[in-house]
Image (cartoon, rainbow over all chains, first blue to last red; front, side, top):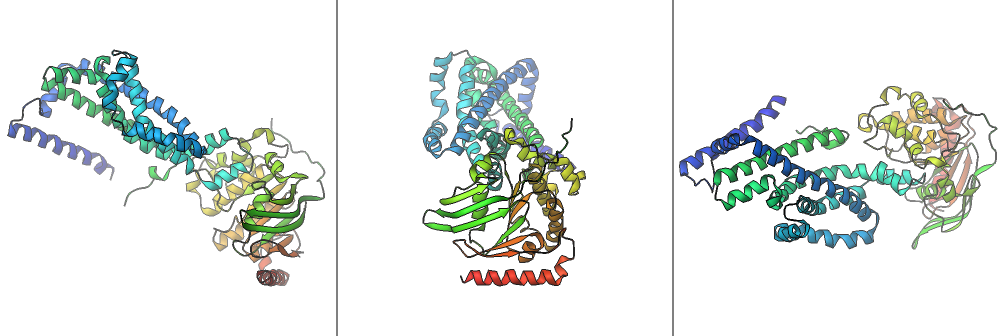
Amino acid sequence: MIRTRFIAPVVGLVVFFGAWEALVRAFDVQPFVLETPSRIVRYIAKFPDDYFSAALTTMRHAALGFAISVLVAIAVGAAMAAWDFMEQATQPILTLIAVTPFAAYIASVKIGFGIFSDKPVVFIVALVSLPAFAFATADGMRGADASSRELLASVDASGWEVFWHLRLPSALPSLFTAAKYNTGLALVVAYLAEGGAGGLGKIGARAVAGNQGDRLWAAILSMAVLGTISLVLLNVLQRAVMGWHVSQRTQRG
Amino acid sequence: MPRTPTLAPMPTGNIVSLRALRKSFGALETIAGIDLEIERGSFVSVIGPSGCGKSTLLRVVAGLEPPSSGEALVNGEPAGDARRHKQVAMVPQHPGLLPWRTVRANARLLLDVNRKANGPTTSDPLDLLERVGLGSFLDSRPHQLSGGMQQRVALVRALALGAPLLAMDEPLAALDEITRSEMRGLLNQLVEGRGVTTLFVTHSISEAVALSDRVLVSSPRPARIVADIAIDLARPRRGGLDDEPGFFELCTQVRHALLQGAHA
């Protein structure tokens, strides 16, 4: 069972990369359109420090924006769950943020904060991640067990105590679901917003400008690895924090 | 340093006083003028048809719902104030254990909030958990316990508060017959001699008779008390009570009152 759990993804990845390699070679695809995995790996191996340091920068941008977004979302989501007025007032704003294409305002934000600064990247990541986190927090907190809510009310627990002991833990399952969606989003946003601020986004942007297929696909593969590592870390964190939840202990089948 | 319980003389008199109590939700009247006194240290059950307003009555006494008119006093103060002063310990129908807390932490929950209102009569939840046979499950999570064990934790959580009034809303309803019977015995053991007053809402006639000093029979909604039956079975109540003729007679009496009340 455990062996299958580890072997299956490896087999899947080997088949995927093998087919990719074979198709690119068979159809002689231009390097800028699609590079073979073996050449991408060789290219990264030539400049390991550059890619490692750029990946750390992108990870920092995404993680900082992600963390700020979670904190703001918990405050906003808690207010939405507690007051109908707050929910009705906030929902259109969050919807606007969610549906507005962030790529369209990246340049404006970067000019506002400073083109070579980390701040606009972190800001955009935080902003774009906010709606999913806020809606998840509000839904999770509203879904807190009614019997437990009444029990806490029966001893006049304060709003903060209800939040800390009941509402916040109740929101964890939906927060982690949103986090899994937002992990990929945060990395994509960081990559696209980076430009002069360094990171894999800067390498990618320069590769596009210089028509360098090897360099571009090395940045793309690095992003994919970064995303995978982030999701694995998130799953480990979820298992540690939410071991009590049915999703973390139910076996399929 | 562990706190030593002080043996103060047990206060006497009525702990719950309801006077012309009415409760409505909009046009829906759920309680229609109840006058009731509950003596300190007694075990009083309320029985009645489904939806008659028993749980609403319990929630008014627990200070969770204000009366629409009339008065609900607990320990000499309005029920809402009694709630703020942690004078009422609730045991809901569903145990309401927090799945992320261990048994030990769940048993402490009511002590961990609104701490300034914790009185001198609080009990150590660990001692109580030992008494109810959960000493080896202190670090377990609720999902690792059976329904009966979860309800025992809920009972300990309420008793640990040391409140003078225990308000129980059909706490045994979801349990199987054998576990229910065990829980009755345990409840009698824990409550008898502690001086705590219990207001117990139930659908079960035998449960009401086995546990109570008085059984109050409610009419269908809006709730009125149509019979107040004294249960004069000796205490401490022991196992095998169900087979005694006196128990059977009292059950019959309650059943008749319930049927008459349904057509009142």
